[in-house]
Length: 277
Length: 260
Image 1 (cartoon, chains in turn yellow, cyan):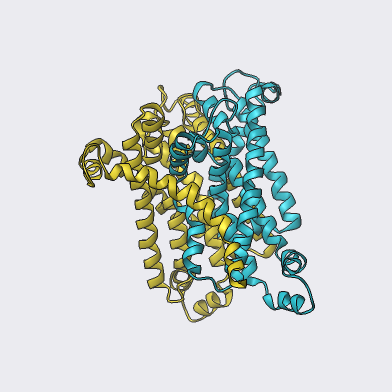
Image 2 (cartoon, rainbow over the protein chains, first blue to last red; image 1 turned 30 degrees about the horizontal axis):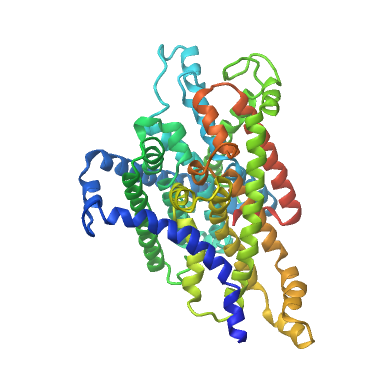
């Protein structure tokens, strides 16, 4: 009797998730597996991978997610390492400074880049005023602007994730490596980097999956010519009433996210025997 | 600490990259021209007046606050008991249940919104407000499960046992002993849930209707048709609110509570 009470505490949460997450997902997934007038088949998915236009969108999304993960990693690792080596007071300040953009609405953060990259934006105005260019350069509504916006969106997340891991690396270890003859760069490469790899992978998973599902930034900075998975779903469903395509894309988005997460976590677990991911 | 000059230069550049765009927005909010210009040529507060006089901004601000608050409370109401059961008892399928409760994080927001729209709005005929609330509940539940769960994992349940053996009722022991010990976790979960619901866009995209539009959605729609500093003014107000929240959190929970 008492045992049942324990399960009772889980029931409200379970019911809400089943009714309002699992059921809705089943309702969009099922029709994609039973194309009109036929039985079970993967036709919808096969035609997705054969459709050049769909594949362009898919590849563009993955490409943006991949490049932004890499750039966030390259910029995030030294910054996070710098923060983690600061004294307590400065670490707090720099952490606060890194958290602030993350808590700022992504519409605001994308809007900032509209002002910077636009035809009458800060960069074009500046370059024209000093006479480097005569006509404004097109930077906004390109893949480039989506990429910049995505990196801008996720860099703080990468930094914060990495600081969490790097804080725990003892300064003594670096000193030991240096006193044993490694120079600073070598000590960093041989001591800090290997110890940070699980954190780097977690950061990459967050950035990659985040940019894979990002909607606001590609919507505001990409325009209709640079659709990604998320903006394509909303366009198909909201403006074109093409529910099948939207659902197929939704499923593909979920599966891609899952595959990337599982793969990177498996790599992390292999590299880090403590398996703290 | 010894000096790391190269690291410092990179870090300064990274922080410049993160902050210059926000500073530019903040400056343009005070411009006097009718389109966004930087640097500004005259000073004016008219865009802030615009924001406060605009009914669509004000009503969507109220809606966003309401949804964020209700979604967070709902998530705490069902999430805290669930996290408690998972931390306290040996439930069958514990690991599976935990990842199930965290699973909304791996479903892209736009898909959550789309699926809810299809099922809850079109099939079950729920009103848009309730559907939007459910969508935001799904967004914030994982924060509650994760953060409250980790404070419960650190809680020593022997203390609760002691209260029970001293004659406390089960519920009494929870409210008088367990809950006071996890308040910081609950507060952190509350703050992060509220902020993330307030800022969410993809889930809300499909779940809008007459009179039911969140502030970020209103901003997105406004940007599509206008290029005046009103949005900059809203941005400044939101950033000020963020700073106030961060300050309060720093004074009470410590800023790292927001990095969870």
